[in-house]
Structure formats: C-alpha cells, structure tokens
Length: 340
Image (cartoon, rainbow, N blue to C red; front, side):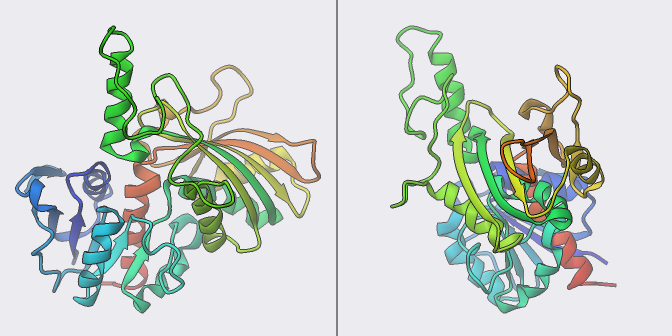
C-alpha cells in the first residue's frame, strides 16, 4: 500500500527533480499530483513513464493526501504549507521559511533521521540549504569519531542554486562575450558570472557575512551539533550544476587522514574518490545526476592540532534539494506513516 503524494512547484528545476527521484527510487506512490502556479497551469511534467498535467496550487485541496514536497519558495510556502499541514498532509519544504523554527525538524537523513519524529508539532519538516546538506553528510561520521570543534568552509556554488534565471544568465553571458555588441549585463547576479567568481550569495548582514554563510552556520548547528563553531565564505562560480566545498575541520581528538578516509569510505551517502594523482578527485561535472556526496583530497592540516582538510562535491539539485526531500519522505514513511 502506497502514499498519496503532492509535488508543489513541479515545473521548476527542483520540482522536476523531485518527480524524477520519486520515480527512480520507486517511492511507494498510489497517487501523485503535480502542482504549479496559475501561469504554469496545464504544463506537462514527467513522472517515470507517465506524463502529468500540473494543477493549480492555489485551489488544490490537500485533504486526504499524505505527503507534499514543496519547492515553491518562501513566499508561496508561507501561504500554502500551513493549508496543507492543517489538512493532515505532511509538508516537506525546500525553502528556508521553516528551517530555523524550533518546532520544525531540519533533517538530513544520513545525519539526523530521528529528528523526523518531531514533525507532528506543525506537520512540517524542513529541508536544509543545499550547501549545508552535502557538508553535514561528510562531517557526521567524522564528528562521531573525533568530535568536531570548528569548521572553516569555502564554497564554490553553481548557478543552478539561483534557479533557472541563474542558469540562463551564465549561458547568455558566456555566448555574449564571444559576439561583439551582444554582451549581457548582470541581472540575477551582482556582477558578471561568466568566466568570473562572485563572493556574494544572498543578502549581506550587519556583521559583513552573507545570509548564505549564516545559513551554513545555523543549520550545521541545528542538524549536527550546536557546539560546533562554523565560519563560511560562500562563492558563486560559473558552473551550471554541482556545488563544491573546501572544508577544514578541527577536532577535539586526534584523527589521522588515513583513518578519516576509512571512515568516509564506509559512511552512508558518501563516495570517497581520493587518489593522490592527477584526476584522482571528483569535480562538479562528474557529480551531476548522482545521489552521492563525493569526498576527495583528504589530508592532514599540520597548522593546527587534530586538523583535517577535504574537498566535497555534490549535485545541488539532488542531494542539496530534491533527493534530500525524497529521502525525508522515505524516512517519514518508514518511521511514522507506515501503511499496509
């Protein structure tokens, strides 16, 4: 016996990925509804070998539906998620709206699956920021072994993290640079993204950090351990899909790089690809379409006691968004909504 599942925002990059992953992982679906805004009403989307026509999110009745995967942004989520939750449908939300609400679980299944049990407070579960999700998957097994004190991370985030507009801007600017007179001015991003990097994601805060950087700090503490100190520099790079992170970790206990490799090799959700030779690491191009969080370049940091540095890459549309949401639905079904 399966579930009645809703995907809200089904025409967007993440919504389409949610539908793909539900089908790929053979999530037990008895009935599925693809919802979109009125301007996208009737647009066709794929679910396995089926084609679905989108329905109107504004008028949809969530009564009798089990799980709703939301990928509609914070403004729409603020309106429709409470309606779905009040109708008895558990919302798994990909926006940032509920991530910091103490009554809403913030979940990465490989890290804190048990937190799903807290969904009943509001009938809502939050999906973390894409850059946080992949990082905590890599950190969790190491934290269990040696207790992390501090994390310093620099991200290299693809334009798909900014939605279709980000992808289009990189594509159009790149083409425009080769054709005199057809240059494309920045619109989605604050500066040219083609052949450039921009150390600015989301708005600036009073302390000089950006909100994206603050998210990584707050979410890591909520998901993994509130005692961990985190500092982040988040950078947008001219890559279409796939976020990369250079992570430096300081532990409370000694941990050498060989043992760190052994731990990561066996860790759920992690794929260790770490040969100390040219090409013996994973780059964003290679991670696209994959479920794993790839870890490479594991090495000792000799500048501090108990330090390890590593390189982490993942498909941000998958583990950073759609895959994590489907994995939450799987945990929810196994732990809380068992049928049959």
